[in-house]
Length: 162
Image (cartoon, rainbow, N blue to C red; front, side, top):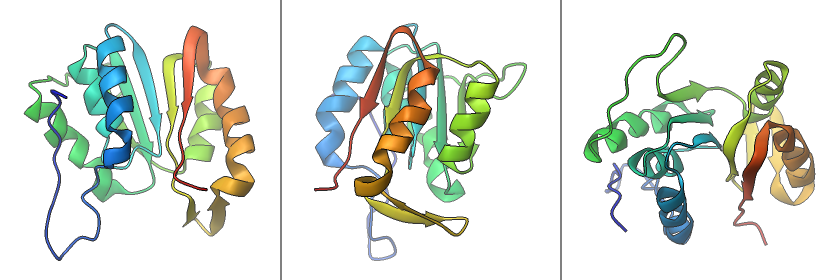
């Protein structure tokens, strides 16, 4: 689909960090991201952000609670020839380590708005002692994310939870 990503294969890792079921969505985003701002929550290795940046996104913000996975984003940007210059605060394609729920509140308080807000959480997880379940908590997550969508923007919600 034209976008390169950093992955790790081998016995050391159980996951490559790239989920193939999201391939059509990443391709769609790349095709429609020119000059857009993108908030990628539960970003993992930043695949959505890399696809958007490769498609000409003006800015991407990737939030995840795992620093090691977020580090993959810079490699994927470089593999696609995307420069990542610094801004007054952060970078053009920024990676934020932290709890997505906390960051949704912070970004809303700042008045931030994005053309694309992507929610791709795991089915279950525990962060800072708080248990997350997509089946139970997705409604709350979407309600927190909706105010961050710019007029005419899109809220993209995915899950592998059945």
